[in-house]
Length: 245
Image 1: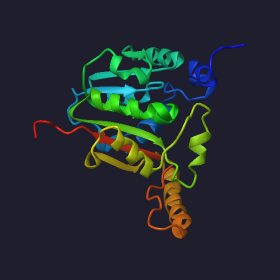
Image 2 (image 1 turned 90 degrees about the vertical axis):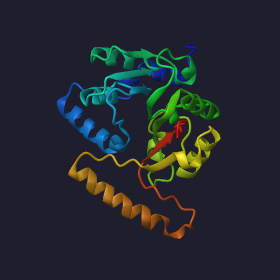
Image 3 (image 1 turned 30 degrees about the horizontal axis):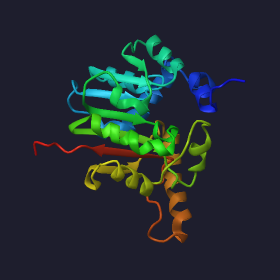
Image 4 (image 1 turned 135 degrees about the vertical axis):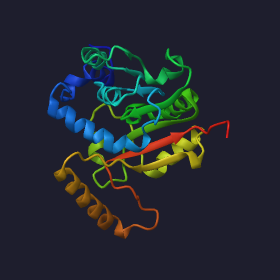
């Protein structure tokens, strides 16, 4: 019997098992870049020489997006050897195979101006999530920010992103996400949780309008504690204060 866990076996060939599309397809790349610009546009560093780390970089779409937008000091890693091989094939030689839970051991700049951790929190064991966020905070330079995307269980369709991937371990609402980041040492005023609007087409934007309406109607029966964010993913920006201010 294979001694690997279910998650380990899936991660090993994650791209193939999840039937992910390739950035070598120009149309896939175009739509992916539109979506990334919409999701992350507010959080891209103004300094193109900023030290940026992409945790769990997958097939490298964000790193290629950043590189083609002029960012020069890029690092990234992923746990899946297949994903790392795809990144190297696409010219991202800086990508390494590495475990996000050992972030303090990662070889690179001691601290980063910006850390992206998109679609990784949900893959971590819940008992390890707090320690991971503490490590992220430790690797942030003063004045730096970390940007996360993770499934939103306050979305009326939240069960779909939670369970569409067998390697997902847990998920958050906007409330529990805030509690988690505060426990990790981030100040309440330094954590921003917002919708991850990502549509890259007219039809997609129409679906977003429909989702807003459904969300409002669905939660009419709920009290003031009802979720405010309708999107299937949460976008979380956590900053480290600039000690010089």
